Image (cartoon, rainbow, N blue to C red; front, side, top):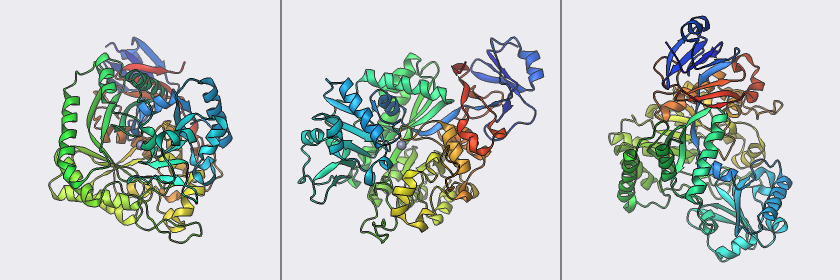
Length: 555
Ligand SMILES: [Zn+2]
């Protein structure tokens, strides 16, 4: 028997468990053809076109990122990219250097700045004026729920003290009502809509840049969590379809079609019909030779984020003195609209993917899913809820009864600066004790999936797995673990990021290591099961295989 690829002398995690005796995998025609001992497979498949000695390191299914924005990430890598800045000064230095290097750009755009680096979480327009005087600047927050803009950008958008907040967002202001330079949620569009739209060529380059980067991390499949117009980006369906058709898409991609937030009850029927039409157009597109783009999922962003007090809570945020304040965040859909649209979408066969951060947002999503179930939805589409930061313990049982998958962005489940300085003070100690309850999800029997939300956070799965296991930030072992009873074991976290994420994205022939499975494989540069937990963040990919083809190799 000839094989295209033989990997031997590996420890093997098959997506659910460590295998006892098998240490070698043979691949032919894009499929795993044999799993067995190194001795047996070297004798039966030793003449494979390519042979890799894994050196005792781990082989497992390649990762599926269950919530990521690769085209946005790849696009930002090609702009004023602040994601590497360690503090406010570094951020301002990068912006100043970019402005100087690009004197003819009409707009300076990009993103990746982080709220904990600035007083009160929100940097001012004046800071931009200092480093990029008179320039129009629009920089998206790393969390993608806000933007930092310059005085010239405010002027071009006509935003003054007299401008009202839009229904779905907030213009941050000083005591006199003057805009200070950050725009939250839907208010981002007041400036974002003025920027030149990214071109097709820029999107194609962004996809290829992102795909190559994700391959270096062992990722060969993902859910693109927003396919549609959002925060200055336009629909990227055609970017994916073109890459699928020309054979340059080396990944399995599930697109989550974006549901517009301005929806009213009267508009539900038309919105669902339009989404059905988009699904049909994508399904009918010419199939590529390798990678595949499908879109049977709808993304519903139920609320915002905790740090900017736009997450929807059951009880009000605390004010600066620790007392209950006067607001409890924003639901982007009126409950009756959410229920109506979720029911209609579920009955049209769509998988639903919710963004919920606050406990009220989660409860509203569950109310809507229960209404869909009562109307005949059997849940076979594998609905999932991402982020799940603040969770009322009573709602875990409701999630279990519905069979929804918990889609975890585990990197956030620790006492980092955003948590200790911005989040805990506005939630209070008691609610802060109900965050990211991964252990409770598992004990309730929920299926788990994992993703990064890149470019909000690094797409490196080992940073997230590190936090899921340790509940401390990578490299900060001395930090107090966040609710250590909610930690996962390494095996549970790795299963979520491989078989769990493959399942929720309906990549049913990936996510496992067994004969007949698709050869989507990663070989690591270590055996994480033999490492102390505090070193999990050091693990990296050595070789990534997609559909039998080596798409990344370190050496
Ligand atoms: Zn996201």
